[in-house]
Length: 298
Image (cartoon, rainbow, N blue to C red; front, side, top):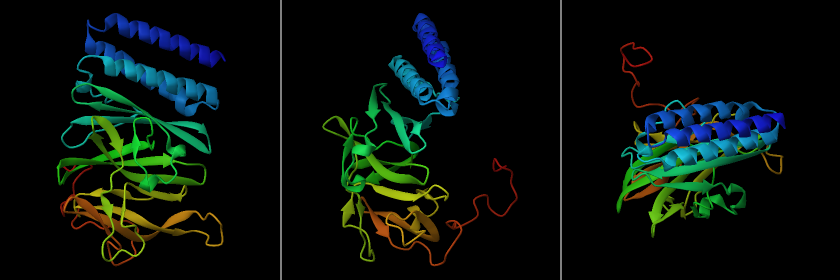
């Protein structure tokens, strides 16, 4: 209880400080909020008490909303934030803020905002637990398939620029998810999920089309799901049951890869990306070339 009172008092102090300098020194007020979010991130992540974690997450939500209200806030990078993922598409037309809250070791929820380059923003409500079939169900700001967004890929569709996002979701102690989703506006409303993932003639276990791609896998495993610019394709691990006798078997990567490639505005499924079993997806050429270079490529 003392921790909650301290966090609440901290928020009041922060809000007073931020409001007192908004309009006088915008960068200073944004930096105050940014530092405060980092301070609140510690109990949100590390506290053993759910009430403290939840209270800290709520305060972070309130502070981020306050910051996004500020004029020209889209120009502020928030580059010191450690607990919030901030992702942009290549054209920087919007950005996506996401963070994770552990409700219990078997239950996680997510906070999120989408901010557009005109400085407007949209708060998202994580409703992943209310999806009946995530791969075939559209979402919106009030029905978001929540997760930590770790990449946004922009591509040319039949009607111009399209955007896909890659997300991560912890389900419980035994399993995790990674997913590929699409984000766009329809009748001035934010929408998630679009029927751009389609089967190819070679696909044996892929529906004719789906709105997003969701991969469940063991919490003990590492799984790849991302756009690879060197192959110009989405590449992901093929998974198999770790224990086939289980009713709900945990899935693990088997060293083979599937993928999607863009064809006529849609992403066509590739049943087998490579013809050997690998520890990781191969690259068409060395990332840094043949010359020995340091971590920065120099």
